[in-house]
Length: 288
Ligand SMILES: *Cc1c(COP(=O)(O)O)cnc(C)c1O
Image (cartoon, helix red, strand yellow):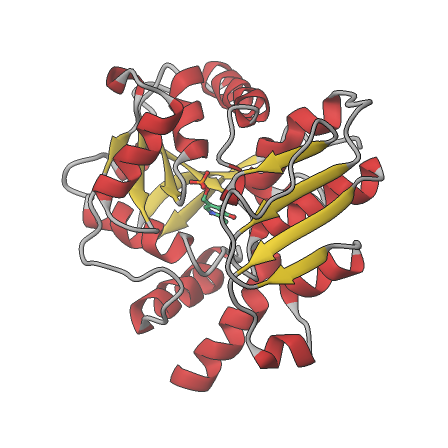
């Protein structure tokens, strides 16, 4: 697969702030955002013994879909475990679920734990959301692209912002960048995120800075303010963001406008727009 590196950085003005956006949503048509970065390692290397990938998580996950692209390309069997599949999705598949099925994913619905997975040396087990050490390979390339941009444009005191799920992307970015990485938790709270960081890196001095969200958000739940800021972004800057993480990210960033110079931020667009379809339908039904 070609062109999974070097996405553009564009200047936008949102609510009066001049912010740079790293457009990782434009990395590649089928394989974009931070999941492409996390799984880049598997594209660039040969795994002669591997025939099968196992992963698990939610039924509309971006990681679930991106792994289906990887497995199709590699000719690997792909089994994905999820606790629950709503009947509307089963009856008429959409979004990441639909695309992953098309790529040959075997979905297993029900309870699971580590003992459920039948792992041997021809199986690759990928943690939920791609929270794996191998993610550092592609994220270091992302960091190099940012560093290059900062140098070429002579930027000073730039900070990076991105919303976190598992925190894998933020953590490895901070590891490979000289500038400060700011992030906020979207799944669980800052204590959960700190724990996720510790699982990947024991040295706390290498962790990104966690910005507490202005209020508690339950992941995947509908919030009118999330829908509003998502629509405002689309209207003002004509960029579609993901609906699960980015609305929380943008609100948190704006909440800290007095603490950080928002005109000196590079915001990482981490893709995930394919997964928006079901969220948009739910939002329209509730608020439009
Ligand atoms: C997966 C994902 C995240 C969270 O990434 P982590 O590395 O798990 O923190 C954020 N935004 C989008 C759009 C994603 O798909």
